[in-house]
Amino acid sequence: MSFAALWESLLPLGRDAGTGGYRRFSWTAADAECRRWFLDNAAKRQLRAGADRNGNLWAWWDIPGTGPGGAVVTGSHLDSVPDGGAFDGPLGVVTGFAAIDLLRERGAAPVRPLAVAAFCEEEGGRFGVACLGSRLLAGAIESAAARALTDRDGTTLAAAMAAAGHDPAALGPDPGLLASAAVYVELHIEQGRALADLGAVIGVAERIWPHGRWRLTFTGRPDHAGTTRLGDRRDPLLAAAATILAAREAAARHGALATVGKLTVDPGAVNAISSSVTAWLDARAPDDARLRAVVDDVLAQARAAAVAQDVTLEHAEESVTQAVDFDAALRDRMVATLAGAGIRAPVLPTGAGHDAGVLAAQVPAGMLFVRNPTGVSHSPAEYAAPEDCLTGVTALAAVLEDLACR
Ligand code: GLV
Ligand code: MN
Ligand code: MN
Image 1: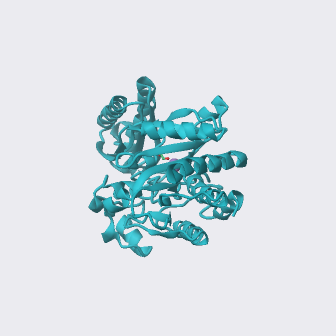
Image 2: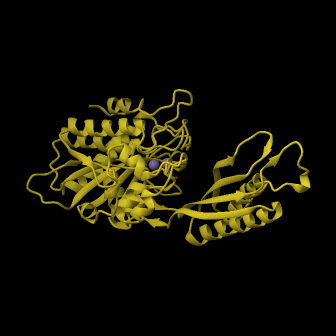
Image 3: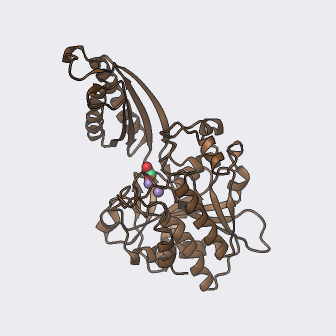
């Protein structure tokens, strides 16, 4: 099956007709369709496939005569942010299957097993914690804490998994599965414009900036919008608004990034002062010290804004990922392999989080990026040209062949 046909077969799943963006949230009907797509494509390729105890999907090209262990694993994720683009995650999964097709067409003879994986809830789009499936696999989050995570309707991860036919009691670290992987290489659309500026189609990841998510809840006093004097108000939305502006200023001051992209305002009446407001802060920085500095700065200003508006503030850290430096030997080996295949691949840092970053703590891991001409991502406008995606397949196949066949 050609890359184009494989890509087209996934495109309609979970796409919202109104926005053109994807709503592939874990353990929903859209997610079930994506999971079926994965398993069907594994079956078409005679790959042994199934979900691990955390719901991550794996498709194995077993090599007779080789024992467990030493596997070369590729993949990414199929879930999306709300109204996400088509490429963030799926490009790595589709390219994984397409690279296996290419290796087989070429008669490549792996001496190690190969696997394509699709990790659950990478975006944290439903349950809030980024890279939840790989974190669970790697033991980077307590399984009880994961089971208790809730979505915006109050449904727990445990209940959502159970409703989708997966046993939430099984959630937890899987050292045996991790130990069977010798290396993990994730291909991903670039989420910036560096490759376009450098005139290159493929990049190799150098490091991931440290990043995290914090939840800030301001609670005030609901009251009448038409009768409450300005001086008598305890309006939590004013404190949240000041904090959002403070985040932008703190990011600029510290050479970091800080974003509030999600806000809930309760009870949400036009003609009432709100009772409580929750704002989610996403912060990222080139190093851990600057990340801590920007978050401390925003929290200090949030406290001051709460005092100024006579409201209360509670805050919680939802997920934090330290800086990740990808395995240097693997990175250099991939650059050399790609050069041998006629692909110049600059080495780039990124501010985006990935399962490869979580797995890097336990398995040598690396990433390939495919050029994104506008750099736009987490948006329906996210785009990579078909010919660049094909170069991505060539690049991934070259890397997998080098790692699995020698
Ligand atoms: C994942 O895409 C993230 O960086 O939030
Ligand atoms: Mn993403
Ligand atoms: Mn992604």
